[in-house]
Image (cartoon, rainbow, N blue to C red; front, side, top):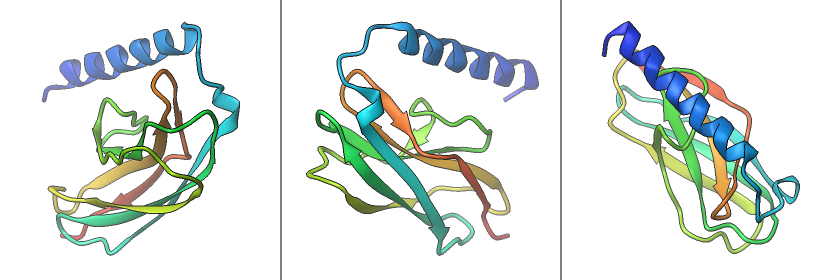
Length: 128
């Protein structure tokens, strides 16, 4: 993907994300909380990453991890996806089809249908 196209992709994602933040929210973002855990078992094309649901708020419809080779990852990027969370606790995502020797950015997320909240973004590099 050329540089101009990549910049346009990021600009579009940031604009779209800004629009979602301006819209009225039906779930309370301040009561939904998720943390990004640690990345482990990093190989050439796979890795494992943990997350921890701290609070589910009004209910979580989807959760997982989003990841990409560029910082500022959102659920518009590659992601793992699990169904409704039954409560608080730790979960693990298995990332696959990664490129060898490549730096990736990842963070946990939760979605209640109208709002997505994210944990901190961390990075890791796959082995050669």
